[in-house]
Length: 376
Image (cartoon, rainbow, N blue to C red; front, side):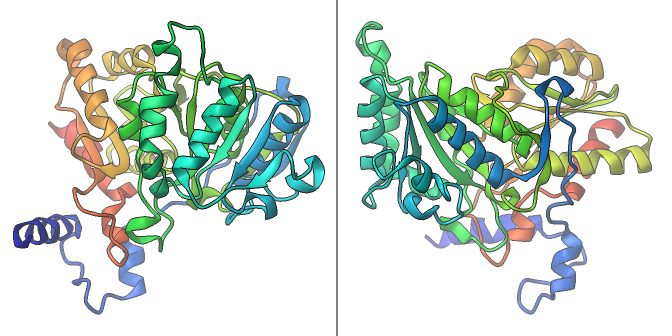
């Protein structure tokens, strides 16, 4: 136990930039100087998606659920406290519109929520389950990994629960600590039969969630909760879907490939801007969007072009999904690499409360990784 404490302390010390005061007595100004999330940069929706309205990521989720319930009479939304809108208000007003039989609370049992969703989906219904925080999804791990993921396979294709979507807010929020801040995507990426989708913005969240609700596979949909109200942009008001399993090249570049998903894209974008200003480097920014299955073709094509790669995610370094990407790039692009692949991740410790600014990858850690691959 002493050894574990020592390892955790060393990891957090390594995360602290040189010259910054120790955690004891640290000032708000010093914490702010470490980094934190940069301002959200709105994007523009394709014009063929029609009329738009300024919408937060949280409202985009609500709008997508509204459309699912309106267009699919078999659809239902359920989870802890969803009847009055949920702790984040993602389901607000849906019960009033569609009734208590289709939008309803469940007992405090994640295993029961997912098991119930599997039952609904296996009988031809569209089940939109909510896990209040991604950190609480682990009691349902057996239902997801051993039931939902294997339902079609074990029946020889005779049965499936493809109508199941499990929503959960994930990641850092500034004050969540070790039970309200985790990023569990890698656990489920290791589970054949389950898809894992993570949006980066309101436009993406609405289109990807609508696609999830109509996909013939069980899907875990992780929502970056720090962006719920902090990210807003002009979102198409109608019904549209975005492709699952296809990465999005957000910014084209020639020198370094930057890969991330969810909330980390804003940080990578900011790091790329710093690299352009300070180093004259052109960064290509890729949003994976779907963690499983992930778009190897788009990623490898970019790395073959740039010869350098930086991958960033909030989850711990060891066995994070960045390791899978790095390994695949090494196999596919080895002769094109100009520098070792860099991973900028959370540390191999429980997610800390007071040390969160040093735990979450910020633009400066990402910038240092970019500088390292360029100067190698």
